[in-house]
Length: 425
Image (tube, rainbow, N blue to C red):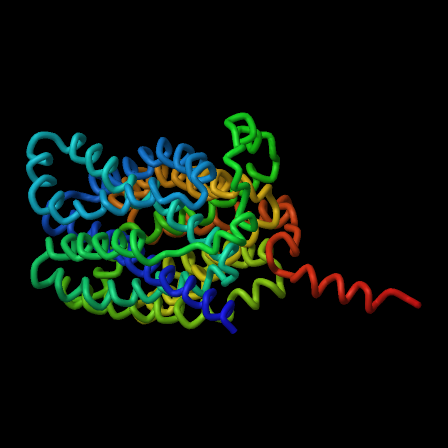
């Protein structure tokens, strides 16, 4: 009974950590484009340049962060640095951004890219691998902690729309408050069951650069990276300026913004509900299959948006994202644990998931921004959807099947008992 109590105590800080971090992510991802358009008065190409710079700079951060995370394991030096830098989001957009923009538009793209990619595009892998490893040590499902991120998405959507209409800069101060809370949680709340820490990797600090670099020789790393470059990256590029396309279906910008806020809240609510059964579902169908299903759903959502005749259809396709994210988040965590050396978990996650993804985002953000301005949203979405379909079919043929026991999809004790029971006398 005491052990169950300890595990429960060791769990509850992590959903709150997910909540505070992904609140920042949801606000920036959902409303930065709108702020750049309405407050900074940037066009699609200029906004795309900022997102490309965020992705490009993160290509430097992510490999370094991955190797550092595998070395640090449960030490909080890096993750605390990221949370403290996040506290300065409000001051940056309130007092620095416009001043730098008046000097040079490329300079503001570079400075903003370095700043936000450190906290978000680069930092997200640090947060997620830390909680995933905590889930292995503390014996809870990662997806159950990630529910905090879904709740954050709902809260961000409900709060950000109204306060953006009240005062656009207030959304960034909300991020600052969330970063203060995140820092406090990391310092005083998140605890690791160190008695079981070896379940999350090598605790001997023996991981060297040669071992870390050996991941580049693994064929399956490249297949997973290509899948992320085609499916998950275009998911993000698709969402970057989606709110601008969505508003074209309404008579006024404010009406479109409010409906977008409610739609996003509904999407995140679906995510929240699905986060509870998804680990059980993925354990049944396998994390590799979960990734493939995610790719096909992303294709359907993008192509559906391209052909949507009105905003009601557009909302329907958007809500498919409520199923996509639980599938991806649960599948990728279990897949990496089951298909690669657990000692290199953070390195593989940073390289195959985030690094490869940001290479694609870096390329396609500017390309998509230019295409939006030249051929329109719908034709751009059609091209994106076809690319996602091709990449998903590639992954379906070449992505290696994971070890279900190593991935935590099958309990080793249960498997041994079943094997014994099926052995003939």
